[in-house]
Length: 241
Image 1 (tube, one colour):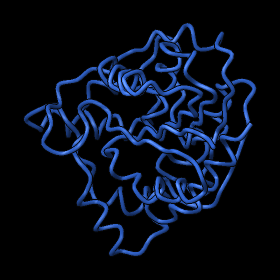
Image 2 (tube, one colour):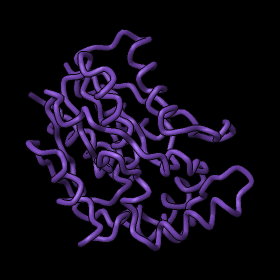
Image 3 (cartoon, one colour):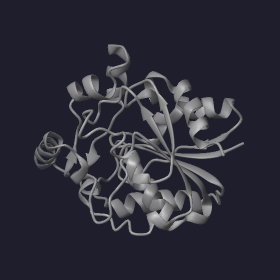
Image 4 (cartoon, one colour):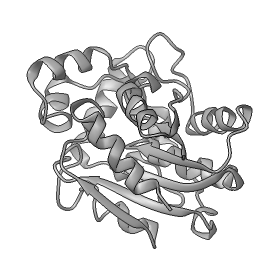
């Protein structure tokens, strides 16, 4: 039995892991899916990246969780990397699922292709609270292209605006390389949320981990919705000893 803590990405909240958690439990594991600070609907959005990290650290510590396999999706990769620097003694393995692996002294924003940088800056400037609302066209064509239209529309309605500041904050990230925690990279082979090639997830992000286990599965950036059972089974594969 493995204890999984699943950290969502931008525009998401912990409830989006529901079907994945259910399948992990069917397979005999324990799974938690916290919501990162500043994420979800009707919550304050004035948070920093440090606030996002602290919310997950506090979640793990307050529940006295140990021997945890900690997974981060997309933006969540930058969160779990920093959580690992803060509480390495509570973690057994990190899983980066099509996730950003930060570079010392850099922000996640700097790892986005220029067209996303321009779009996010424009959308945040036009908002009342420095947040980015993802356009449906990008969600449909680049994030969840492996679903039918009904599922794409229904899941889009459940998303919330993303605070820009955590994406802009530069991370020290100087202790990560020295951590003796096993790492896995889970790659969706049809994930085009980052354009394949120069800006793609794998091997650009996975290569920053050094020694790691690579696990791959078919599907988009949002297989948590389009194939949650398959995702859960691949998470188990990525998380096993």
